[in-house]
Amino acid sequence: MKVIPIHDATLPLPPDRAAQAPADGAVFDRRGRSMRDLRISVTDRCNFRCIYCMPREVFGDDYAFLPRRELLSFEEILRVARLFVARGVRKIRITGGEPLLRKHLENLIEMLARLDGVEVTLTTNGVLLPKMARRLRDAGLNRVTVSLDALDDALFRRMNDADYPVEKVLEGIAAASDAGLGPIKINMVVKRGTNDGDIEAMAAHFRHSGHILRFIEFMDVGASNGWKMDEVLPSREVVARIDRLHPLEPVSPNYTGEVAQRWRYKDGAGEIGVISSVTQAFCSSCTRIRLSTEGKLYTCLFAQQGHDLRGLLRANADDARLDAAIAQVWQQREDRYSEIRTAETAALRKIEMSYIGG
Ligand code: SAM
Ligand code: SF4
Ligand code: SF4
Image (cartoon, rainbow, N blue to C red):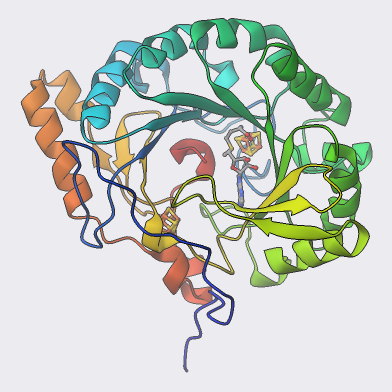
């Protein structure tokens, strides 16, 4: 049987995905890509059970999350982050699980924000932002992305499966904005047949808000979300649906390799983005590397295995040894999963998003 890749080759490629000017010390993978974005997962736990990420049937009351001693300490994270920066990383994103559940996260932010020439950002479900936004901003956090999958309260509660109301997330967005963390990016994962009916309402809500709503195609990360291609709504349909109500025009990327394709409302009401990881892969410019909660390095969101840095850290390896390990992992990288995705690869046992960090 011929296997047809899911990536839609008929779509135009995103504008200018060429590599950016390499930094001193930059290291390149086998496809000529440098390392610029480091995503650090600080916990595998979450107060939500989003149906597409941590379905309750799998992540139930008896699920064995990592014990405390397995997690990288803030000092360990800082030590490796410094080495990544010397290798060209310019953006650090703190993620999880739900990163705001990690105790004293502001201390880590403060440590990372002191690194030279690095932007520190965070992705969160938002409900703890009213309590923490100001502290995070004072610690040096540059920006925040908040996930929100629906405006309809009953639907949102069903999707987070932990009975959190939409209002709590909206309060979190307002708190982040008041703390000076805006403009805020709002991530909506679109699952066809589940929340695609809320696309227009979400767009209407965030028009004129100054925040940037981004629609993410439902992805086959992990091995427990029951992903099916039928449940992916291609971004071009999202754009067409919004354009019908509020005409849009494309905007050029902020920087080369930007994951979201940008669109703005012709009437000046703001901007939206689409992240088409399934139908319009952007592997050729992927500069992201991920550090898991327990210190494994992953060179792709869809990786099946990681490289243990914690073992080296805790065996007292010096910086030169750690740096050599990081450089070697990147130099051997060949990943381009989204370009070669098939129904067969989608069924492979991959690492969970809540563990590797989205
Ligand atoms: N808990 C935080 C949050 O939800 O923002 C941070 C971690 S979460 C894993 C990071 C991002 O990944 C969120 O925006 C989430 O919606 C997205 N995500 C999780 N599973 C996904 C999937 N199967 N397909 C597409 N995006 C997904
Ligand atoms: Fe938690 Fe974020 Fe995953 Fe939802 S998407 S379950 S909030 S980690
Ligand atoms: Fe990068 Fe892997 Fe996603 Fe491709 S599939 S864009 S290589 S993380």
